[in-house]
Length: 144
Image (cartoon, rainbow, N blue to C red; front, top):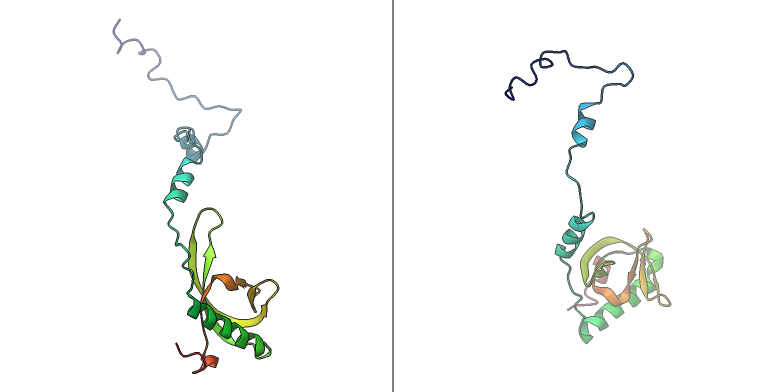
């Protein structure tokens, strides 16, 4: 008997449909054959390693003095809720380095005990990581 003849008795029978179970949705049937992820998390680890971060560039003494003077000015007029733009470094929580961010908003206060600038949205920016502060209120006070 050849291989072609072995199934002649069943080849034309109707497809069996269960009376006890509902037919499986096509998407669920396809999921049975999806690839097995033997290295769970490997893709995430590779992507995390490939993610680039910036390194923090320490301001020089002149830049530190200018930032300090601007923070004192902001602290003195904090009742006026000055509008400012701050460029600061945000350290990455998972790896060395971080990124530079710019936030524009209203300054609420400068907390010397915590060493941070507090924005009206509740954001706390460490004064050690501030690189630049801009505001129309500064005028010519802090010409660089």
